Image 1 (cartoon, helix red, strand yellow):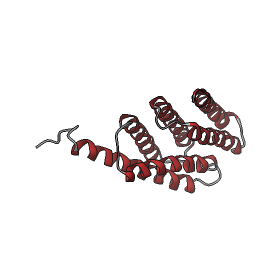
Image 2 (tube, helix red, strand yellow; image 1 turned 45 degrees about the vertical axis):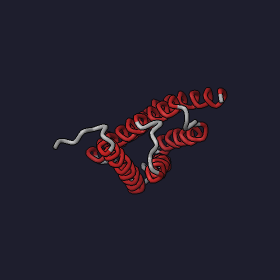
Image 3 (cartoon, one colour; image 1 turned 30 degrees about the vertical axis):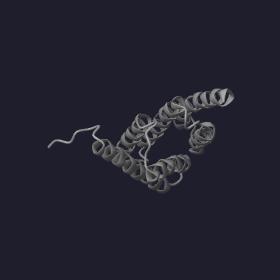
Image 4 (spheres, helix red, strand yellow; image 1 turned 90 degrees about the vertical axis):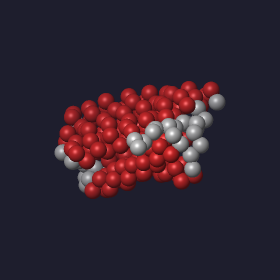
Length: 176
């Protein structure tokens, strides 16, 4: 377990270290594929993080949430600045990713229905799909937009159910 924990933290550091390289590639490398290479590197690190993540370790859940927010905020904002993604759409996507990850950390340890566990797993897969399509968004950005919509819908469904869970079980009192 200790080796996996150390390896997980090293992968987290490498993933965050690649984000400035993504920005560097978009500014300094004239060929658009350079940006795609660094985003593909972030995707590979994210897959490795998922393989070494211990679902029973709250620290891993928090680290994964921080990495997810940092990666998607950086890459989506980068594409918004380049003009490949609509600004309103991008801001909405970043906000949903942040809220989803905050709720994921807040609901750690709570027993949720299988449906929400499946939706959370789908969210993780859509994260990987979105990164894969964003790596090639310089060529054609429609698949990236579709993948981001799938990611946003999955996040919205999970957030909605978790808010319903909070209201239903009395953690948030609705106004009468």
